[in-house]
Length: 318
Ligand code: XMP
Image (cartoon, rainbow, N blue to C red; front, side):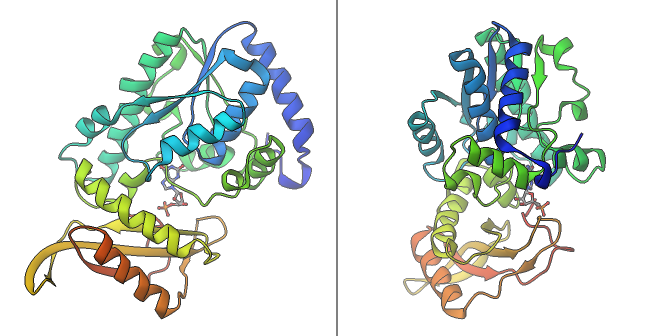
C-alpha cells in the first residue's frame, strides 16, 4: 500500500523497516547491489542499520558508469561506515552488448548480464538467502503498464528467484515514490548529492549511445557527459545529458577533412520525467558546450542541442 509523501514519517518508516528486516533475515546473510542512485543508496543504509556486516553490498562495475563513479560512491559509503566491494564485470557486459544496436535488445542484454551472469554468482558465493532491491512504487506501476522494462523487476523474465537461485527478495521501499524516497534517504544520513541527485538511468551510459555499445564509444560519451554535467550543474534543470550518435559527419580539423562523431546535448525541464521540455539555455552556454566538447573529446566534430519536447522525444536516447 502506498505511503504518500504527506503521510510519511521518515524516522518511523526507518524504524519499522529495520524491525521488519531483522525479523525476516534473522541471523542470515543478505546482499545487495549499490549503483549510487537514491533508491539503492537508501536500501544499502537501511539494510546496514538493520543487519550490520551481515549485509554484503556490491558495486557492479559494468563499464557503463560515469567518470570516477565507482570509486566516488565506494568512498562516500566508506565515510558512512559501509564497506562496498567493487566487482569488475566490464568484460561480461561488453561481451553481452557486442554488435547489438536495437534499443530494447541492449536493455535486455544488460539486465541479463546483471542477473544471470554477475549477480547469481555473487549470491552463490556469499551464501546469501536474501536479496535487497531498491524497487519503488513507480517501477512497479511502469512495469505493469508496460511503459518500461525495469531492470529490477524479476517477473518480467519469468524468474521466481526462490526457485531459480534459492534466495528471497526484500523490497523495503516498494510503498514509496521518489519524493518520499528522497526524504527517507535524507533521514538515513545520506548526503545531499545522493538524495537530490538528478536521475540517471539503470542502463547507465548505454542509454545514451545510439548504435553499438563498445568500450571506445562509452569513453566518448563519458567524456562528453563530464563536460555537460560540469557546465550545466547550476542550470537548475531536471536532467542534462550527452548522447553519442551512430551517424558520423564530415568536419574540419587542423585544415583537413575529418569524418567524425556527433554529440547531442539534451537539457530537460520536467517534474516527474513523464513529460519534459528543453531548457532555454543561454546561447553562450551552448557555445561553450560546443567549444569544450569538440576540443576535449577526441573525434567529435559536431555538437547539437535537442529542441524537442517529451513526448514525442524521450529523455534518454534508448
Ligand atoms: P525516458 O528516456 O523514458 O526516461 O524518457 C524517463 C526517466 O527515467 C530514467 N530512465 C531510467 N531509470 N532505469 C531507471 O531507473 C531505466 O532503465 C531507465 N531508463 C530511463 C531517465 O533518466 C529519465 O529520468
